[in-house]
Length: 82
View 1 (tube, rainbow, N blue to C red):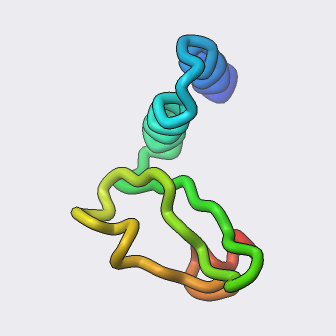
View 2 (view 1 turned 90 degrees about the vertical axis):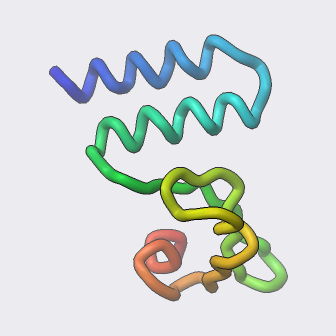
């Protein structure tokens, strides 16, 4: 039942705004809550360089978007992106 509740919360949150940054922020917060994690991120992949770029993050520290650069297949996040 909890899975359906979190999906509903994410859906409601996504419906509450048309601003992409706010949608990502809210969805990431709900996913972190659902997985009971301390950190989370939404990433994009640069198709040319194969480097992952953090678009939104929680709990990774200041300037994580600039500090953390992973390639596809590198680390847990890079493996998931692969």
